[in-house]
Length: 189
Image (cartoon, rainbow, N blue to C red; front, side, top):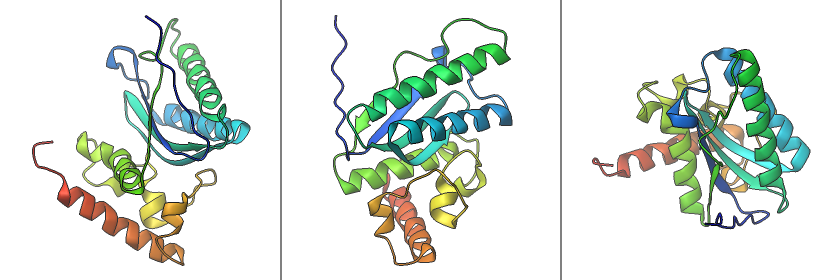
């Protein structure tokens, strides 16, 4: 059976995620996380992919991105996943696939869903039990959006920019949005 066609719309955000093969750990130590983020930043610049948010877990990752052309997302993801697999295999003296197939990308078609996706991505470490609060987790973009931690390569989305006239206003508004989204979640999700 043929793979379903993927649709990439320049200017329309996507939630991209990828899991390690058989749910295996793909990020073991600081060097792994740092290398992956360097690869994301490099590929994003090279191919015109605006990265708005991320979260790196031990066995998977999430990105919120907006491609600037039809080819931006697939080319960037091919480079990111391929380069990280080569890095990982060299480092751990192994051969073979690292990822559980092709990356997944869900189009984000409206503003409410965009906020829901970003909050989901940045709260993922809390939901997984590896952090008690999202601002405690280093390998997520939450601290950039909620506290103003400097990041050179993340591109603020127009929705985020619209939260306020100053960085402090945007950060405060974002914290409120996250709180409201977390409080409105059904308890049995």
